[in-house]
Image (cartoon, rainbow, N blue to C red):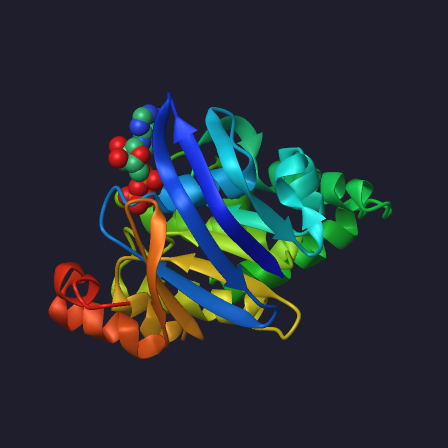
Length: 250
Ligand code: ADP
Ligand code: MG
Ligand code: MG
């Protein structure tokens, strides 16, 4: 589903991703862990096509297409979803407006008819209930005055509505208390645990992986994947730390 081969990328002339290779098959939840500054967020921005992140080598194939050749909106229409470590606030635009525009833009990109207002609200209510987010929250402006937990739940409602084939979730667990973590984790499972889908789950902590059980765990360090294993690798990182685990031969 996603194949990253020897990817290099830089910001302001500084190399951040340095020969990164990674494959995620359909049906797989692949966790990415790594020290601060390793390039985890950079990887998600490069996959999303964020301006300012210059790819200098390597390739990314997504569902058989050259991802790096596509505009950000084309990537979204092709089924790629990005969840951000720091969701942005959009004053003056309600969540309902934003989500309906986003969904219908993607449907248009796939040659599908837009959803009517009524159809959209039904879908939004269903996904908001899944994330235990009050519909009143969705009538408010995007993320304005939302707590950290509310922002993450609203983002997962967005993911539920867009129903992507592949999600890159960057520290979706940051700023969540124990109860919100469970709600968000259960939401990810409900929306993305499907044989036809894939997830790249970027996290620092085992606690999210207790809820969203990964099939594989990779360690990203200094811009490349240095180790890949099963769920036990995350447990070992939690107990032994990055330095000890990375010091072993790959
Ligand atoms: P992680 O998410 O793993 O903590 P990041 O991808 O955010 O790491 O950052 C990787 C490296 O890139 C860090 O050294 C960071 O300082 C650097 N970096 C990130 N954004 C910029 C930027 N806009 N300009 C220069 N360097 C940046
Ligand atoms: Mg970080
Ligand atoms: Mg980061």
